[in-house]
Length: 432
Image (cartoon, rainbow, N blue to C red):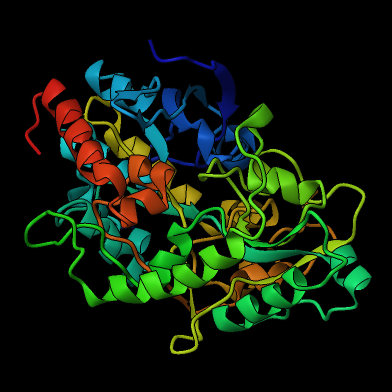
């Protein structure tokens, strides 16, 4: 059964009056009241109260919200860990809103659990006008031509570094806008320093971020099969061959007490680490658990780029708001989404560390103001790049958990994941 966290919150409503008597004016909306059930991707790293329900409480005081958590499982060597997003679909769990990270979209879309939103959006074009059109293009690509989820926030990424290590070794720290070649050169300088000891120079826990800067598609869009013949794969291989040579100089133990590379960074055992701020990811970004590094000086610079694409950062995880087909209050649910994309809640979320989807420099300028981990840090490094890398519409959570093994087609793991997904879809009557 899906584990539920029943957080019952009161939420706020539009100030409304009777219909306008002036025919030139738009009729005022009916108040929103009653109960709404929200399904929440808890491994996104987002707290419902901070990033949604407190804003709704302020705006819709006559409504009541219950929140149920959804945790993710994933394919593992012929089996799987408990996967609540699969159970939600199998049980057709009732809901009025669902918040989920973008790598969960392929399954929710294919199963038909979500309501297509194009017809609803057409009645309020201001909703999509607020969002970058390129982002909605990707949403439509995931939805096979339709919109099933509306982005309301996104993760951010940086190159974190331990300033104490750089000071100790008398090596200049990284700077904004560095290319991957420059970062690798800096990492080799650190790795070859005789005082480095049992400390690693560089780690890239979530390698899909770098793959996305190549705009690699795991599956060929025409055949649905692994796209290993793409020339981009050779370029990817050339970069990661360099990185793996550096990585193998010091392989920190894994799996003991569930340590991740961000844990080791927190302990001062890694000089630089490129990764995200929020969520589960594949290797626990800092805000998901430990804050790097305890008792040591640290900061961040912008995520490295490739020299031929100096303005392209990695593909961020976006957080979508969707409406389950079984919702009995779809129009009201869309109004909640519309409000969550307005200036006030987007500003609040930005201040708390969830990057806004609005093209608003003032909101972006307040990013991280209330985030305890980011106080005094160079947070605008998170927002440096005007372009985002991309991953294919079929790229999903299972693929991300397996990381490089998927891209390198190791031991047939991609075929196994695709088989596993087909079985899951078949279980709910959908043929992939």
